[in-house]
Image 1 (tube, helix red, strand yellow):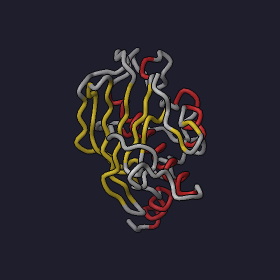
Image 2 (cartoon, helix red, strand yellow):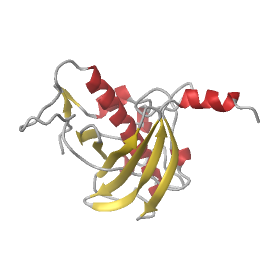
Image 3 (cartoon, one colour):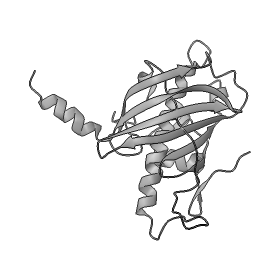
Image 4 (spheres, helix red, strand yellow):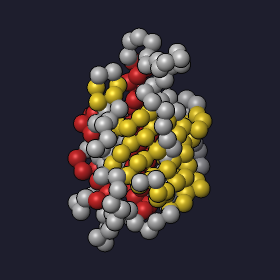
Length: 205
C-alpha cells in the first residue's frame, strides 16, 4: 500500500482528510494524499469498489461519480495550502533550494451535468477547502469508461490548478487507475460562494 504524504510530521491519510473537508462518513471518498504542491495534488481512493458507496445507483457506480472524487481532491488541496500558510518557518525546501508544498504531482477530474453529485456539509454550505467554495462549472469533460465500480486498481485522482484569483480558481483534473485514464476535464470553483449568493439576491430582476 502506498504511504500517504505528510505535512510536517503528520501523515495526510484518510483521518486527516476527514478532519479538513466537510465530507464525512462514507461520503469522505479519498484514502490519502500521495503528493502535492502549491499547484497540484494526487490522492488515492479505493471506495469506488465499496458496495455501500453512497454514490452508487442501480447497483453500479457510474464514471460521472469520478467528478466527486476530483471535487474532494480540490477541497483537500485548498485545505493543505491554507494549513501550510499557517505553519511557521520557510516551508519544505527540497535540494536545490526551491520551495515546494510537499511533492510535485498531478491533474484533475469532472463530467457534464454531474455537478449535482457534490455534497454539502451539515447546514448546506458547500466548501472546497475554503469556506463557501463552490464548483460552478465543468468543461471539456470526457468519460473514457461507463462505470468505475468494476475497476480493480486503486484510483489516482490528479488535480492541477491552472489559474485563479481571490474569487475563482480553474482546475484541470484526471482520474486514473493503473495508468488507465478513466475521466478528465476542467472545473471552475468560486471561493466565496456565500458572497456570490448575496450578490445575486441583491441584484434587481
